[in-house]
Image (tube, rainbow, N blue to C red; front, side, top):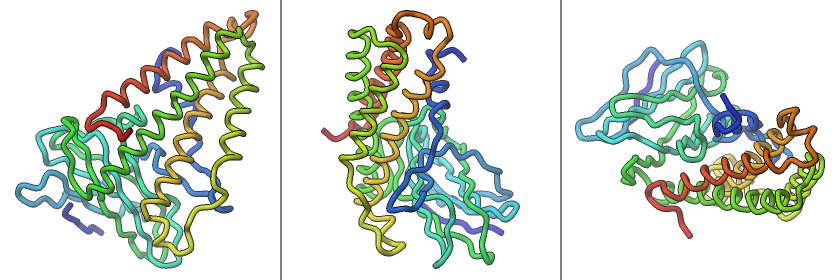
Length: 279
């Protein structure tokens, strides 16, 4: 069934990010699985639709009752980021919201090289009704873009949200380093920062109908929640599992310095990405 559409040491960022894998946040009482989830699904038995001169194409196949969206790079430059929305038939809950795939936001997202594809496996079909994916925007490695300019800016805003959160966390870690904080003190300070952010965010999103979920304000709010959650859990979980030799030390400065350096390199990568993030 096929439909086609035109369109490991602790200095490793991969290791640090992999320890912060919660991909769901509470939104108005509902749990929504967000785009930062690393989706590696079954490769559909299909070929991609491709039109002459089109830089990117998309296909939808069903494998083992699960829809699989495939993005194909027909351009000569690698794809570094793309943004998809997935609309399900009325009454269905597909288990995944908008998909942000971004090599700078999550290092396990790898560039989609020319002539290659990336697959995203969705939730099981209900009543044999397939969802309707839309490839909204693509960013190539040279900074050129494809798709809706507003959605391209949405990818860039999501990067900016992540960069801002990294900077705030680095400031906190630097303070803890200067204070020679213990492991428990560091964990308490990180938790307090998280609690303060949670108290300051809006209580609910402007979602009253299914279509509202895909509006730019709603997705921006979800991404802010997701990126903050990612950085918090990454830092918290790595402090929790810091080496025994560090835990027995009088302070955790050495480990926190290493962790701060990883965040700094991640932030520098975001700032160096093309096109530039908004101010």
